[in-house]
Amino acid sequence: MSAIALAGSTRVRRVTGRLGSANVAVAAAAVVAVLFILLAIFGPLVAPHDPTELDQLNIFASPSPAHLLGTDDTGRDLLSRLICGARPSLAAPAVVMVLAGAVGTVLAVSAAWFGGWWDASVARFLDLLFGFPGLILAIVAAAVFGSGLVAPVIALSIANVPYVARILRPAALRERNLPYIEALVVQGQSPWRICLRHVVPNLGPLIVTQIVVGFGYAMLDIAAVSFLGLGLQPPSPEWGLMVANGKPAIVDGNPAQSLYAALTIVLAVVAFNVIGERVSQQLLAKGAR
Amino acid sequence: MLTLVVASVVIYGLLFISPGDPATLLVGGGKPNPEVVARIHQEYHLDDPFFSQYGRWATGVLRGDLGRSMAYRDDVSHLLLGRIPNTLLLVLFAGVLIVIFGIGGGTLAGLRGGRVETAVTVGSSVAMAFPTFVVAVFLIAIFSTQLSWFPVFGAGQGLGDKLWHLTLPAISLALAYIAWVARVTQVSVRGELGSEHVDAARSRGLPNRWIVRRHVLRNASPPILAVSGLMIAGLFAGTAVAEEAFGIDGIGSLLVDSAAKQDLAVVQILSLMMVAAFVVVNTVVDVVNVALDPRQAVKGRDS
Image 1 (cartoon, rainbow over the protein chains, first blue to last red):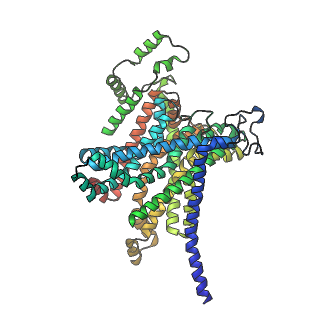
Image 2: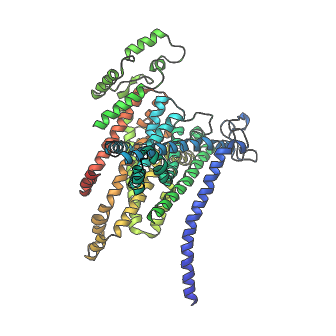
């Protein structure tokens, strides 16, 4: 009897254990993500030092109570720079994905609604763009319009449009063929109004999911652009830029700035990717029901 | 082909409308003399209408005249010549790493299961989160600085030296893709192993090696091929980061440097090359896909 009970209990534990570990990962990711978002909003208020304050007598300082992560090659407090870097590092990819979501929605819904040659040309355009590296687009944009975040952000949002639209178009088509849309058309409502008031809100969860799923990748691309020196310029504490700025010092045995910034990027990307994966899984499960 | 023409017009048009006068760049700092600027305008045909300029540029490119770089004061073709081998070698090196460790590891994990599978799954989820520039920084800190096993900078001379110089860049370029390919391969192989035709082959008593080669790997390859197109495009884009991080003179770092200097003649050619490579790779992937699975040709026509 005890053997059966034991077997039963281990099986139960194994099942809950697996569920538990998945949930723990998502919960941890959520905590990290919320922390980063809070830092992006309130960072400059909680940072112990001014992120651009120089202290030439105190360069490459080791961690100490005054500088918890030490200082960089010009004596700036690394912790404060990482904290204040959250805002540009997260806001730029957020804008990228919101723009991509908006344009992708318009393309997908209009393609599903009008069909015909418009649908075909949108599909062709998305096919062409699909898979073309956003980083290349961003570099070319920076070449044309000069460095700064505006051009790369727009380029990366264009590069992300196909990923959003590809998922949305079939869903929009399914929605468009539902009887209630037919009813609204018969009632004489304008297509514009039907799309805005009914189709797009019903696609809402899917749109948000696509934005969340793409966020981590957009973050990596923005960081890469900054790393290449084509995004924000020094002394901005943007994380990708910090990795690049700290690189010369690595050879001299002071890798702190680059490594901490790199780890921060990885941590943030992993957190947002775990959340994105979970959100899309949940949406899939809901769709299957 | 049409794609290429459209892309070339778009690329040229984008750079045409870009703010800033290339002549001022050529003159350098300070207040430019209007007469000199006017002469430069004439020399480079900067005041002609758009399609006349585009026509001159496009015919030049077709004839092999890729234009002149304003920042380097050198022919673009000359700039490319010395750099293309480095970039190709880097991409090839990364590609070999991806095939060996990505496909190899994924297949092994899919076939063996158990511990190997867990290890590959965990390893690949961690590795996938490491972008090229982060891996580069870690590799430099550990292998170049702490251990001094590999050089920090440059592309080296001669094949052996080049390979030695390109080892760390290739690893940093390949790591995330190795993880991605391993994951795709593993899922695909696993799916095929559990399929009915593999059971049937097994019940007929075919040798395991034969089953794996003919029935599992062949059927598992389409998803891997499907991502390989995306991957090759990503590798070429990634060379920009890897070469910049390791100070290698290649196409990627040339693109970044000329973008920073707004040297549009170079950017035009390089982006056109990237688009051309992208189109070619996608076509090749489509063709190979159809060769492996003729049903794809019919499916492709439907959609």
